[in-house]
Amino acid sequence: NDAESSVISVNAALSACAKCSEWKIALQLFSSLAQRKVQSDTMSFGAAISACARGCSWENSLQLFSPMTRSQVPCNTITCNAVVNACKMTGDWERVLRLFSIMALNDLQ
Image 1 (cartoon, rainbow, N blue to C red):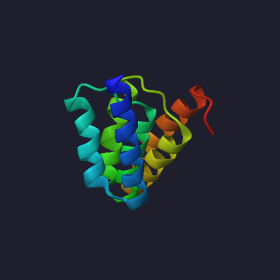
Image 2 (cartoon, rainbow, N blue to C red):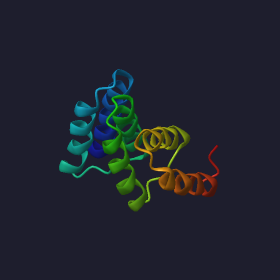
Image 3 (tube, helix red, strand yellow):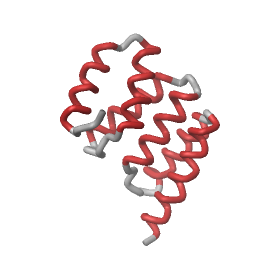
Image 4 (cartoon, rainbow, N blue to C red):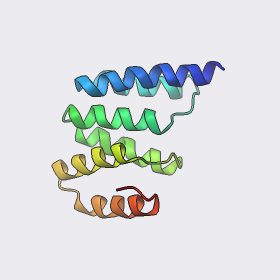
């Protein structure tokens, strides 16, 4: 369907942004999903979070993680690693400890 093909296309673009550290473009693409009322998935969140983390926009990567957990989108190892790195750069060790709990609950290593 259109929503599924839309999220797949945006996820591919988000992944490309993550590889190139283009966090501003990634945030615009990520926002476009909500504007079109398309549900973001694990890949969407993970690629946007990674793009922000790789682009040294750690606060943005942390801001994306909260709605991910609130909307009960499953976490994966890549997303968790990007958030841990962002926390390391911002000194947010309490969030790292909470993240380790989430990782343990989801059987992630």
